[in-house]
Image (tube, rainbow, N blue to C red; front, side, top):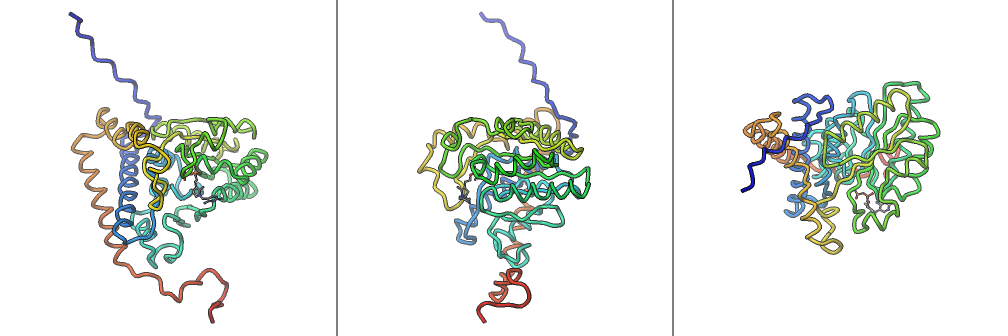
Amino acid sequence: MASKSKPAAKARFERHGLTDEQLVEILRIMLMHRTLEGRGFQLNRQGKIPFASAGEGHEGVQAGAAMAFQRGRDILVPYYRDLGLDLGVGLTPYEVLLSLFARKADHSGGRQFPHHYASKRLGIHTISSVLATQIPHAVGAAYALKVRGERGRAVLVTFGEGSTSEGEWHEGMNFAAVHKLPVVFLCENNEWAISTPADKQMANPNVADRAVGYGMPGVIVNGFDPVAVYAVVNEAMERARSGGGPTLVEAKCYRFLAHTTDDDDRTYRSREEVERRRRDDPVPNFERLLVERGVLTPEGAESLKKAVLAEANAATDRAEAMPYPAPADLYTHVYAGDHAPWR
Ligand SMILES: Cc1ncc(C[n+]2csc(CCOP(=O)(O)OP(=O)(O)O)c2C)c(N)n1
């Protein structure tokens, strides 16, 4: 008869200096990210909003990276899939819902594409849907920090692996490396650019391997592990803030849902693939880790989830009750002065 083996010792939990409060905050952001993404899809299917995108599978990358961002100092240049990153640097669920409902109180007056947040208050640049256009914007902001001698500040810019095929990406990487600019390039590699798989995007399986070609460090990190992402992005941001130049970080993750509410991913990938990758789902896995390691009690985790849902529901009701912009506002902030082209 086989002897009873001792239970395997738990692998050491490397928290990279994060306190219990910070670890719970990371989980809270991941839960809110997932809840609001689901809400976007629900509202779309109810016919209440025209469009929403989906970042399920990106929660670990974004909540971890947000923890490395210094509010009031750093600049964030995100892309359309960064709901969790935007929440993590301080955007409120109400602001997210105003964008989805396209209400007048939204930062763009209800005129921007959904999920295209911006906030002067938080240092979040406005988003362009045109892939990789954010790269020269971010590099330009980092160049300005350098020219003005503003040490201690850095720019964090994000993009998918598909965007690394664009010319702007290469030009921005090169310029940032040549001028040793304070910028961190964070690639959220979810393996799909709508229907194009990563191996039809590039022959090299790792975006980070390209860093050497520009003359900057390139690091690969498990994007399902928010603490590992925090550690890598934090080190890169510190290097950038202290004059050490740019870094390319590639966080490997996966997109569990369709690209957006307008996409049907059954046409280009199998349900088996998606189900298999779901085993790495960072949200329940990180919750389980925090409970196992005694950072949270099971009851604490349940009340956190209830609080997140209640806040998301209240934000939804409040935003939905707000008015749409007036038709006459259509050209506000588009033309200087009171020029109105229809007159
Ligand atoms: C210049 C440009 N080409 C094509 C598109 C259409 N488009 C929107 S999202 C997308 C896929 C982008 O994939 P990736 O950069 O990997 O990011 P992901 O959406 O997977 O997070 C494409 C092709 C676009 N917005 N801009």
